[in-house]
Length: 143
Image 1 (cartoon, rainbow, N blue to C red):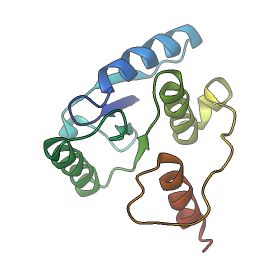
Image 2 (cartoon, helix red, strand yellow):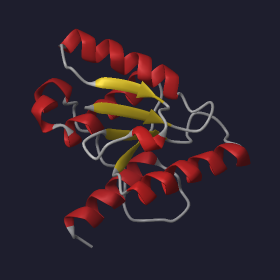
Image 3 (cartoon, rainbow, N blue to C red):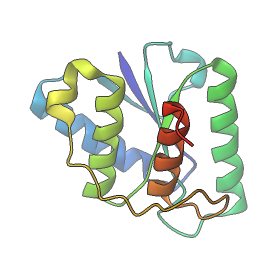
Image 4 (cartoon, one colour):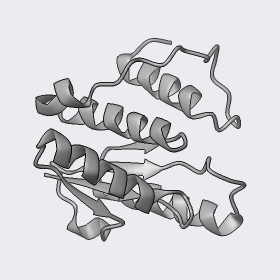
């Protein structure tokens, strides 16, 4: 099983890949972390994490690459999760995403739940917690 770390340039994907590799090695979890693999090499059992555009003011070219990655993953029928945050928070969020997609390692990957700041859907806020809450609610069928 592979964890593909994807993202536009300067979204922290390499730093996240390195941090995940180190964490997983220390936990003895046999998950291969791939930094920006070719989408065509991903299998249905692989996990895709997309680094969000929250680390700095993002450019039009970063936004275009982000949209191309999302479209490519959707075209392949791969589910993916968007990872936001900085430093340790981003690693913790990535571990949360991995735990939800790889329940066999959830005990080692679990993080404390983050208090909900979300109060309702909006289309342009770009807040990672808001996006996570919206999609969680959509998947569960609650409105």
